[in-house]
Amino acid sequence: MPFKSSTREIPHVGDVPRHVAIIMDGNGRWAKQRLLPRVAGHRRGVEAVRATVRAAIERGVEYLTLFAFSSENWRRPAEEVSILMDLFLRALEQEVAKLHENEIRFKVVGEIARFPAPIRELVAAGEALTARNTRLTLTIAANYGGRQDIAQAAQRYFADHPTDVDSPPVAPEAIEPYLAMSYAPEPDLFIRTGGEQRISNFLLWQLAYAELYFTDLLWPDFDAAALDAAFESYRNRERRFGRTSEQVQAAQGA
Image 1 (cartoon, rainbow, N blue to C red):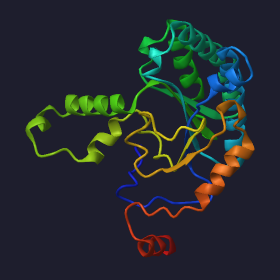
Image 2: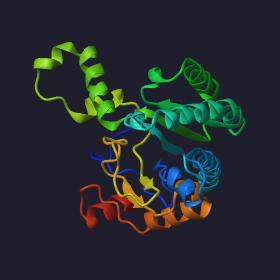
Image 3: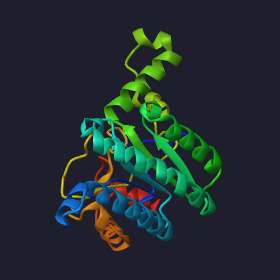
């Protein structure tokens, strides 16, 4: 069932964000600082993913979305792309069964058709195995781009509603069920590690009213304490969703 957009209704706001989306930036720089090959940073980054998933569950997060590989990352050196594909394959082989044991639902969004067949097969098997789990929904965005997501959603909408092409403007809520992450509420909190302060084509539609948090920590150094710092910042925000403070307070007191 698609979730309603925060641009229309005020969602419940708690001390812990229901949905956290993260750009995991800084693996290569982490390795470079230590005079190590970039692959060492990516491997350490996988460990940070494990730690973050555990911390998210312990704190009551319901949805965790991680940007693992953007549609623009194919521009990186071929050797590094090959290493990333191998790491993704190994992570799928080693981690999906553990996710299932911990009642975590596993999802992948993005154009995975470009990935090698073994990765595509493991993704499909992992999603099927964990489909009924409800403790946490872990989404990996792989070969994903926000603009591409919106464009494809529009294409799918008009394929289902061909007569709407010449009709009045299409309302945003009509497109939302066709987005890659229509199964999840919009992120409450967006985190980017590595010191950069941009969204980089990640969940452009869904981040419309997310709280943004940037940290200089490189992704391999991100841990439970770093997640707590992001949550502390989140708790100090007033989320108005285009409304006044008085309106939000009245809605929360209703």
